[in-house]
Image 1 (cartoon, rainbow, N blue to C red):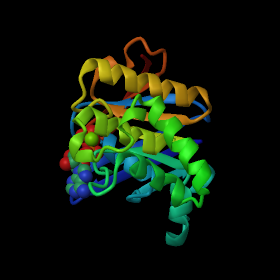
Image 2 (cartoon, rainbow, N blue to C red):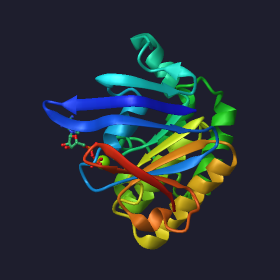
Image 3 (cartoon, helix red, strand yellow):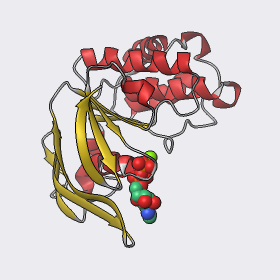
Image 4 (cartoon, protein in one colour):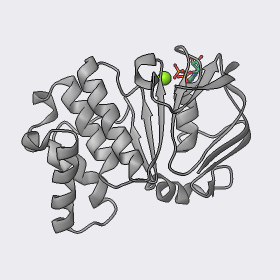
Length: 220
Ligand SMILES: Nc1ncnc2c1ncn2[C@@H]1O[C@H](COP(=O)(O)OP(=O)(O)O)[C@@H](O)[C@H]1O
Ligand SMILES: [Mg+2]
C-alpha cells in the first residue's frame, strides 16, 4: 500500500530523512515515532505529495509519487484522509459543513452527505455539536471534527500527525479507538507520534526514526 525505497529529503542542508526504506501493507496500522525533528512529519508529507523526495522512490496506493503528474495529485489525495495540525477547520462553517466538504468535493449527493456526515460525527461522539462553529468547540472537540472529516470519505489510507497533541488522555484514548475501528474496516492507518502511550501495548508495528534515520522497528 505504501512503499519507501531509499528515500532522502533535505531542506537547505538540513537532512530531514536519510535513505529510508520500509513498506506498509494494505490494512495495517503502523506507528512512526521519534523525538521532535526526527523526520516524522516530513515522512507523512511525502506520502500525500506535499513535497517530493530528493532521491529514492515512494509508492502510495498504486501511484508512483515520483512519476505523478501535478494534475493527478488531487486524485491520489482523494484516497488519503489527513489529520494534521495544518489542516484546520474552516472558522465560518459549522461542524457538519466542515465534515461535509470532504464528501462534496467528491461529488457525493446531498442525501448521502447528510447520512454519512452524521454517522461520522457520531463516531467521534460529536453528533450533538453538528451545528457548532469551531470557535465554540474545545481544542479536543475541534480535533475530533478534523478526524470525522478525515474518515467520512472512508479513505484507503489515513495519515495522522501527532493526533494526541493538546488532548487529555481520555480523549486521546477515544481517538485511538476511532483509528482502530476505521482500520478494522480496511483503511491503512499511519500515525506519527512522539507519545509512547499511543502505541504501548498496541501490538502494532512501531517504526523508529532518529535524526532522519530509520533506527529500528518494534512491536508496540
Ligand atoms: N519546510 C522545511 N524547511 C526547512 N527545514 C525543515 C522543513 N520541514 C522540516 N524541516 C527540518 O527537517 C527536520 C525534520 O523535521 P520534521 O519532519 O518536522 O520532524 P518531526 O515531525 O519528527 O518533528 C527538522 O530538522 C526540521 O527542522
Ligand atoms: Mg512533526
